[in-house]
Length: 219
Image 1: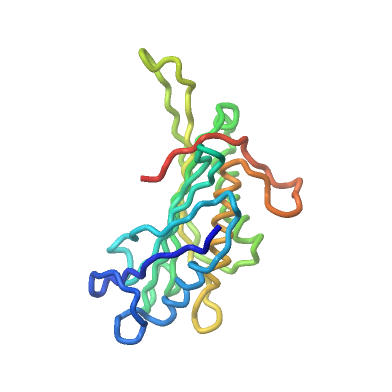
Image 2: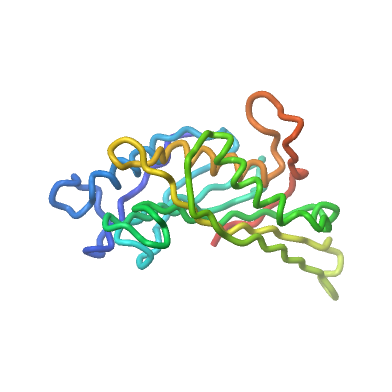
């Protein structure tokens, strides 16, 4: 997979910019963090591309969206947004924040598991921990929604979608910049696990994955 590419979005002047950090309002720490996201290498099943970030959550933002692809099927998809406020943010307890939405369609037998929300949340924290990442102030929701079809659509199988909305503060390292490439890789691990793919590298018997399935597109 090619490295992620995209644009800086600087809300201080409301324009997209890829000019140098000096004089264009893009802090060097944010530029370094985005460069790390762009150069990260993910699993080959993941297709990643930049997308326009939200405009009002922080002075500076960058976003990517990704899908786990199997042939013509998207097994899971999501969006990851990097926020940066050089002045810091009390709720974040830092100057950077990562916000994500990931979702996939489940097989009916998995969707009925009462512990599924807790398991899915543990996949997020487990993906970060497995990469040895330091983070704080993690919070979010896991939502399970079912669809049942009637009338002309009655031949369709019932479908259940799992959705994780979460945010966390990546701890800053050298130069005040978190290891954003590693955070993106961990996020990719979460997407692949949600899609039902086995872990990359040596299989871990303690890791539970869901059966492969078709997933929705992020809009």
